[in-house]
Image (tube, rainbow, N blue to C red):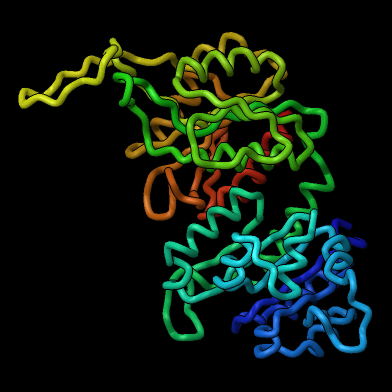
Length: 399
């Protein structure tokens, strides 16, 4: 059993979604998990500690310094006890404090002290979720390795409608289940995974370059997931603002030619190459030695193709190796992707289109998986970290 004797510390912050948490606890304990609960004072206004003690079968911790109890290192004991910490619901206030290392009550102190992974299920009004500060905190936490499930779109207790609703208990349970399955099975143990990420830059002159909107989030998520699944992972990343994933060897490159050289060097020792990077298709025929000056006459820029990395790698591919490509298409997505799959003799291609909450710059995506001779496998809108684990499960099966 995946959950047998697994220890889950469940944190609740002050939101109406607290009333759903007993269902999550029941899902976990029914499968054999041991659950302890930490609540903020605000959470106790929505649901009582007694309710959560009853369903979890363990005392609930609320106060940092409860009267009449030995609490000298209580926060450390709680921080070191679990296999996973799940915070549901997580308010905007909690995200802000955690992103900035503020530990002013028991739950945030436990989060600060834990060496264990933390999964967060946000819940708040859509305007609060879309607030630029909240989004910055969310992005910072993801870059630091915190896991997220939701929020989802739906009707709020305040009658507003939009993204901000906490994921349902069943969905959070499935995310926890996927996490334990991935980390316990280590399905990629003994394998070497090579992942590329981010954009490339092709210089025009000493101060300008050609590039694209790629954020590198998908590639970084894949590298982090591959490491979690036990693989020896190398990430080759173009220029991004992301923090390199923990436990992953990272090589930073700038241009498409640098990306090609790094891939060519690392590919021979790899079991799988996942080309999630978005290399430039064209580069200037010549690079100006000085800054090009603005003129009323404008400027004609001559371009030439960059190296086709997947095409070049194809000739070096051994039978045991798996190569996964990505295709971002604005039209005829499946048709163009199938052509790329066939021409470059890929084992799999991940197709996506830019749109609302998908493509460059978003934490979510909606992809379709194509394999030679198989029907398209269309996935719903998911967080890129969820896509990464699902995709790597497919890679593990191919390997």
